[in-house]
Length: 247
Image (tube, rainbow, N blue to C red):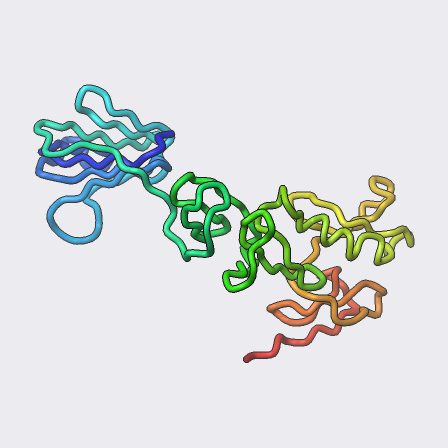
């Protein structure tokens, strides 16, 4: 995958599955790092041809070719007006400064990225980045995440782990309703509470977004979530869920 975005302007012939015979004109071609190729002419905001997240993108001897399975987009350049590559990064809300290079950190769709050195930190989509609070000692912003209670941890999981924080608070805190073993806090793609006797007992549930506010009649905790109160066991027949309060 290319690292930068290529912008090419020129007189070109564009061929794809909808117009295999080709269209010719003065266009601007944008080839992005994720494999998306867009061809714009003089009118409107919508490209006249495009291929999203192509498997391969090549530019050889004045011909840009993007393919994705049976789909293709081919741009033949007859005369070049401009052709260069530029650094691009996700555009998001500023959340602080990069501890590695001092560049600006921005939040976008589950990732915080430095606009300068491209250092990236993943985080839960429901997390709140604490832009007005003091940064961690390592220089990264801190975030607030609700998993049983509100935890404030460093954005850099190598510095502070949300999983370790939740484990410290709730590991062995609840009993398995199937065998009375302890429920351990485990990371299996996400955080879950699973029986210590696995695989003999495979009881377990994902820990929801929310805070523990009560005990269910089944013995498991009740969480206050954005969608109302619910038992740790989302299918529990004993739970008496209440709708979330609207502000």
